[in-house]
Image 1: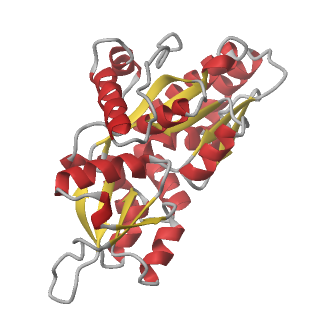
Image 2 (image 1 turned 30 degrees about the horizontal axis):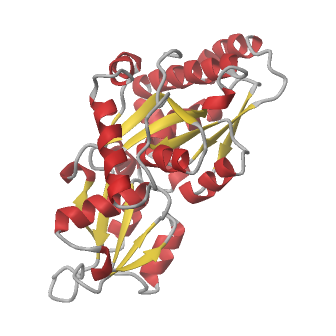
Image 3 (image 1 turned 90 degrees about the horizontal axis):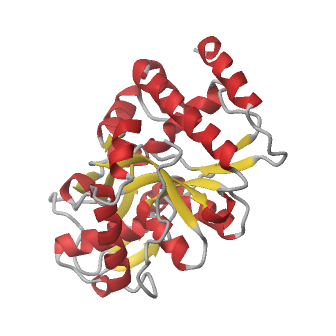
Amino acid sequence: MAAMMAPTAMVLSSCSHDASPLKVGVSPRIGSEPFYLARDTALIPEGIQLLHFASQTEKNAAIIAGDLDAMTLTLDEVLQLRGVGIPLTVVTVLSVSAGADMLIVKRDKTGKSLLKPGARLGYEPNSIGVLMLMMTLKELGLQKHQLTLVPLAVGEPQKQAWLNDEVDAVITYQPFSSELVRMGCQAYLTSRDLPRNIYDVLAVRTDHIDKKRQQIQQLIDTYYHALEHFVVYQDDSLYRMATRQKVTFAEAQAALQGIVIPGKELNEKWLSSESEFNEAAKQVNRLLFQESVLSRPDELDDFWRNQFL
């Protein structure tokens, strides 16, 4: 695989003329897997620096600090960051959740769910956890004040909180949810049961587009090249993913089945004024404002561009 990819990587590297690297922040959601594959197979051009963040919260902090030019985010995160003055534009949709995001709950000795008024619910603030929380409460007919909300980063912190009996339920996503399920927890509600509003996207600093245009194009070309390889050599890609995420091959397969990954052609349809993605952006924008996550609705000016597809 590396031998096949190397020539393309060399061609892409030769196109970059910007002395400073394009710093790209990624975190371990399934939609980001092609970026990790590109890194593992030495496909990333020299003018691009891929930075891994263990949690969305850490990555958002780096964005706010001005340390990143581009980043993988969820749709609601783009809106929240724009809401605090970070100019961001979506340039590619990486995936849409169709079961990968979920509410995991404990059950008592009789098998009854512990998710009831007063339950302790762990979720990651300032990330997809916020949107999942709002949609979950609406679906279950609960109000925030009826639950004890526990801020927890997805991954190891949620696992430890579970082991220490500090939570009764958590909002999480694949592949981290697989480990909790192995520990005897059960999926109570997934994104398959909720409105199709959970998108993973690649966003760039709007104010960096002109000066980093060539590198952004390289990044997107690299992503689609790696995505093609991810699909053609899926078993190899899933083994890499399982090893990195410390899950089984079967769990990696299940995680992949919980999302829809659009190719370039579908992206061209979604990044347009009359599309399901554009409608989802409007719906999430309204929801975040109604729930006071946003102080005012986003005007959605320059929210997406399809020029790099």
